[in-house]
Length: 68
Image (cartoon, rainbow, N blue to C red; front, side, top):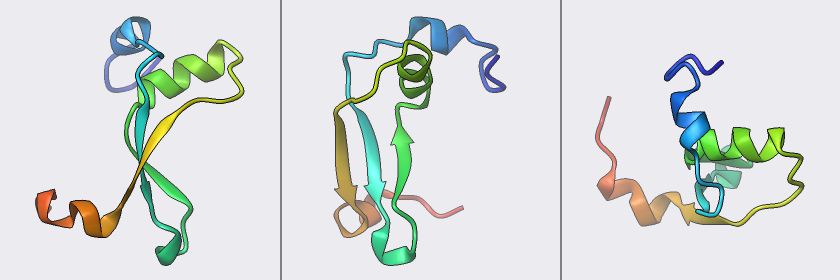
């Protein structure tokens, strides 16, 4: 029942690919998910207790982000 895709991307999600997180501990938040929302939702529904993720630092990607 995903708002963005009505479940289509959730059904096709391949949980063998790691998601991507942005470490935001210096901003008072632990992590922000950049990629992998549907995979994460599927892993939780399947009862998975752990997963692999790439963790990036803001300084590593800030020049790749576009302004709002």
